[in-house]
Image (cartoon, rainbow, N blue to C red; front, side, top):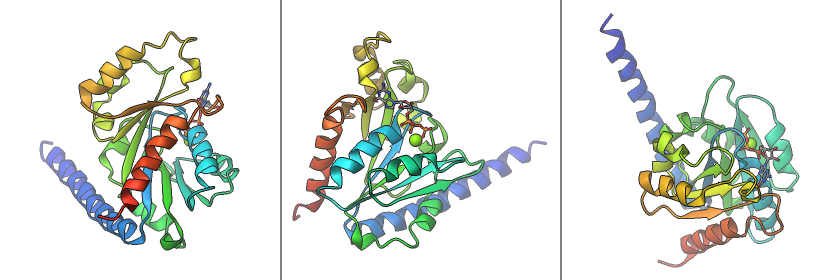
Length: 226
Ligand SMILES: Nc1nc2c(ncn2[C@@H]2O[C@H](COP(=O)(O)OP(=O)(O)OP(=O)(O)O)[C@@H](O)[C@H]2O)c(=O)[nH]1
Ligand SMILES: [Mg+2]
């Protein structure tokens, strides 16, 4: 009985190692093509697609943008994102609770990266599994909606720890659910000290302005001559 556990651990470590190698190769490809890659992770329904639809619609005027979106089933999110007129591809994972680098690589097979400036990757809604899988992205955004409870970062520290930006979403609902912004910020800083935090609402005019400003700053930084 006791030999089963080490074997499982070994298999898991090999899978992660393989993913890391593929992610590193992807990151190098993105860098060569000059593509800024932003991934979005969150619990199911935190508002990734709603935010992304708005970001694609606005950024399209200034950059060549595209998106990959992962779900276990349905093309629903790709259909919503396609309303922005940006190129979009759905990755359906079946029973798999996260995207991995190989799925991203396969989805990009017939896309010309040189024709893109910014690629978004919406991960499967899940606060656990996506944390272990590097996708070669330049920036990982973790979304947390005001309706999920201020202590989510403390309960799911790994995914917050591995992110570069936290986005507090559905901020239009903050008063209705008595959202405690101070407690949420303290929870984020407890697991990922110094992580920048912005707020967003997909239901308010200009509700994505803070996210846009942050992203445009990063994109400009990437393009600045060294
Ligand atoms: N009030 C309000 N509702 C929002 C906002 N953003 C998203 N929603 C709603 O929240 C629900 C889930 O939003 P989605 O954008 O599908 O969330 P998601 O994170 O992409 O969900 P999955 O891909 O299934 O994990 C939908 O009913 C949205 O209309 C927001 O800023 N304010
Ligand atoms: Mg979605």
